[in-house]
Length: 64
Image (spheres, rainbow, N blue to C red):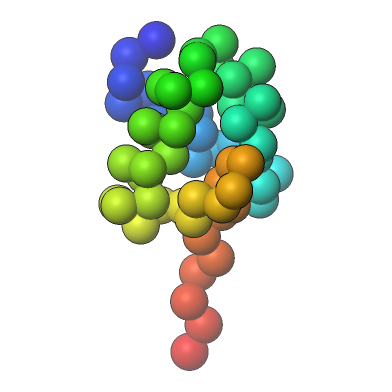
């Protein structure tokens, strides 16, 4: 799977589930734990999600 495609799939997964464990994402994407961790860190830097111990959660839109 192409890197950017995998990142988009992670974002889509979080939109539907709000939280994803490493195990969930490893199974869903067929990727290693190291790859998932690296992707989550990159997406967190981009402001797309919040990395948590054991996985990640969706970033909720800011309210006024």
